[in-house]
Image (cartoon, rainbow, N blue to C red):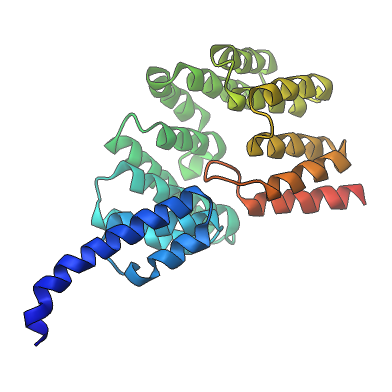
Length: 286
């Protein structure tokens, strides 16, 4: 009896899965991560890389990095030549490395680097993977495959893809080398090349705040507010600058509370990070 209905089942199952995946992706875009996971729960065991990727991204945004890693590993196994899947797997390994114990962190960090490098190898124009690999090289010690010289070589690849991002990369390298003047030059160049980019304004404002030039930083944040009033990332980064400087803490708390009430997207900092910063602001202001 089952065999008679098998062709019908084979036709219906993919349609159901496709519909659920579309709905889950829409929920993910609205930052409804738990809802996306719930929507895909009936097809969570599906050999569909897109399903596994969406589940993985949703767990990642909920800071459930081990679950995210497991889903991305399935996606990579299903489509081993996908640069995007390797990139997201690297992000999950990286976050696990940041939050794990000292014994397992080095292994996870190395896996993150390997995944990022594989993503870039598969697609030399995957800007997000290149940027994450660049950040890894900048932050990781040499024994884990990091190094500022590697970052400088990779910056050349960024130049061919995005001149604005190239200046941002050079600014970070200069900062690492304690060359404040060169860093500021490149942060300003990036902003001048993209004067309507709130992100480039935030980068410059954050740099100035880190240098203790809070008044100048606030002036650039004011420019950013004209570009994108109430942009969630702007609320977060301005509050972050205040908390780091241990100044304007009541305003920082207000900004973070507004951030947490905002409709966030996957491009915004995770809610967990904003909650951590809010707690820090409260402790500093106590």
